[in-house]
Image 1 (cartoon, rainbow, N blue to C red):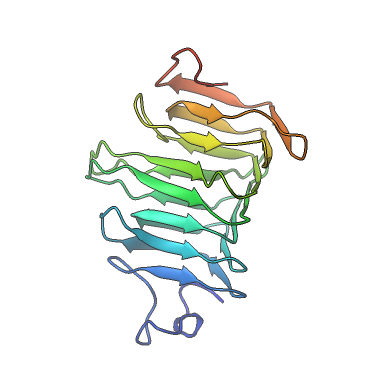
Image 2 (cartoon, rainbow, N blue to C red; image 1 turned 180 degrees about the vertical axis):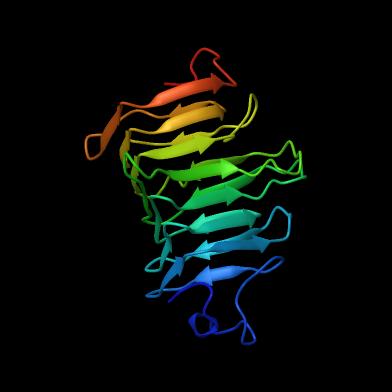
Length: 212
């Protein structure tokens, strides 16, 4: 159901998750964000969970801001015109989107309607978001026509991805003001495509850190 519909949630006292709350999308539920939503409490705890078998979709016109870590074990989609924001705001905390279990990330826009993943810096915070993966699980990651900004820093990884087991495709995306990438070697049972992307304002270009 829609995030904004109280009936979508079973333990929210007749309401919907908001500022200061946790949210869990359990199996086999599908939850869609179609407007602006904010959860979490600016701590270093997991406040968004997409369980294995659950699906979270941020639709066109939807924005989900998470002021904490998120744990993705199921499927997470961002459609063109949709946005995910790490709610760093006025904090110095660095927030993680951790991919666990057999995760599917599909951040897929179009040439005329990109999707967005960014750290919310409106409050002047120095904290940044980053995307991390569980080294013992397999993930399918498809990123296309998506704009990424303020992920990682000179000391914080922006993307930590292991194509030795993952299937990874990044095409037609933009990366602006981003920390370094850690991409491990490609395995025999995985695939990796990175092409037609634009990179600007890399924050760390040290030898051995992949920035393009």
